Length: 112
Image (tube, rainbow, N blue to C red; front, side):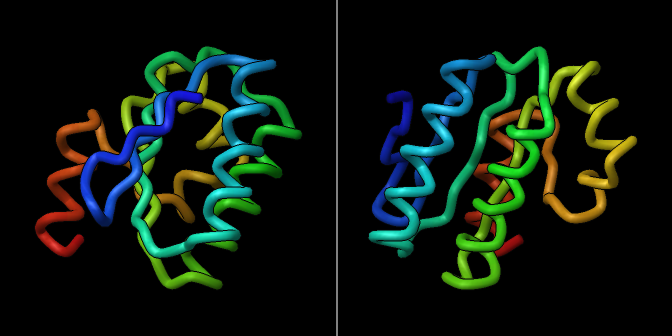
């Protein structure tokens, strides 16, 4: 699973298209529900398609991570097609999105 401990307080997750996307988010949700003491940066660079099941999993991850655990969740490097899905569904208004991984990681160190 492409989840990397970037630091003691940050997980960096490299996502790719289904079926790997679903498997990775399920594993990440399990990790976050057990030990929700880290901020998360999701790298969407390898994701070309997002379906309703993927969106539901992202929303669940956001609820567990941000609402329940009071930790940060940053999304990075979203491709044009996937960004279109974010705009149509309104996800762009509820997730913090950055152009690239470096910007997402930097926002954590800046307290953003």
